[in-house]
Length: 203
Figure 1: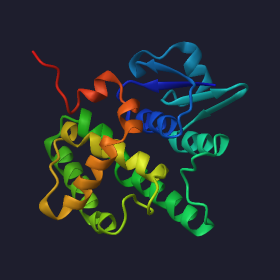
Figure 2 (figure 1 turned 180 degrees about the vertical axis):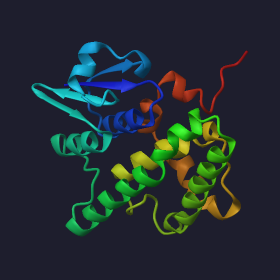
Figure 3 (figure 1 turned 90 degrees about the horizontal axis):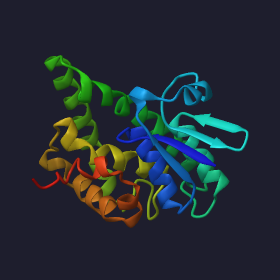
Figure 4 (figure 1 turned 30 degrees about the horizontal axis):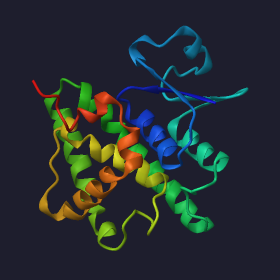
């Protein structure tokens, strides 16, 4: 089994975080998405990252890879056992992807000020709206982390890169973020470049 992952790609990062949370020891090859090897492009017709190869199986799309890893290595589980909660977790992952992860390219690459400002507002307001969840539970779905936490934590880590400061009503989200950032699994999931997003190297 081998994972091809981007160095700072948030989709790759959340997949690596799943590996770390479940303590799965597989080969991870960091790839520059701007210079992807031709053989890797042949594996994924969409030409993006991450890509997981498990014997003859090739998977792309981070959500699919995350669920596959959770089922392939079932302990500890990173999805709720109850089918209703599992469906809710899948729905929340889909919404996080559609509403927030989709803004990553605009927030990091766009030169259009109005477009970036609108994306920042969408993400800031969305994160503030979910703050009450973290007044009730340690993690999104209760006492244990799930794939939703893996996705959300990776997004929160990148807020300084996106130029976003959360307002006072979002303090529960910030406290949640600090708890997640302190977990050894999260620290171990970071590439050097991701670490430097919040800890600039000294001169």
